[in-house]
Picture (spheres, rainbow, N blue to C red):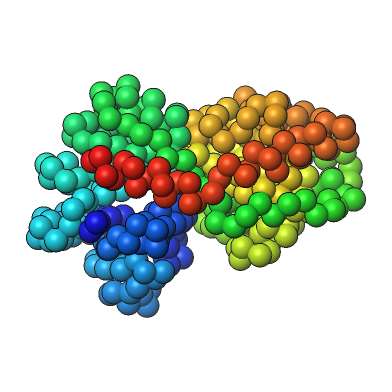
Length: 352
């Protein structure tokens, strides 16, 4: 099976995120288990080679993020006879391959509110255009990562939508001894759509009732300096910066609660990563997080920063409740293995 994947970023891109991890894990799994030949067309970044093989997956980089969609479409048309299927990854904008009979749509989430968070009033243009572009793919098979996004697509008229969820790139970390000091952790890009400022506000509410609590902020991004200023004078807040996988899981294993105040998520892989370390999650009741957080079992879905603070206080002050949820998390995370997701994706590819 020869497969072309079109995505604006790739696993080696410093700006890459969960979508790129998902794409690479599925691609390399298909190469290893099903002997597929896979090319990922993507944009260039600083000092990136134009072509590179990573884990058996060939990456072809042309242009930048602004031009990659058009160039990717041209590449797909020019090379369409070389591939059995073309996977068009839609991240706010796709690669316009819907006229090609061999194309399949892969989408993690609709951007919707993201446009206004990132572009303010100017976001009205992509907010209007996104669903119009997406509707052009309605007759194509589609894959997404959550039931929330599946419903969004079905509401837009899609008739062939399958869910292949995320997974974690390492076995469940298991619980280490949690730190004696109650620890809340935020894990993600420091950008407006993740609302890290809400994490600090939530922590203020926790701190009033649990004075020795602390907050670890793991990640980097454009809001870092603003957040450091906002957190100034608030005891217990530590900015860990961007960390590697080993450091990330070590910190999660020591922490007690993950706070996820995102505007929306494709799925919320950070929730599963935390669960694999016995760390329950408290997140807003939004698309994606509704799929990854099992309310009352592996964490809580909340409707406000005040509600989030209440739930976190409940978890870090009720030892029996925390121990129960921590065990639930460890068991739950065992479901999220890439080998299973690769098999599910392969089944879809074979029927496309």
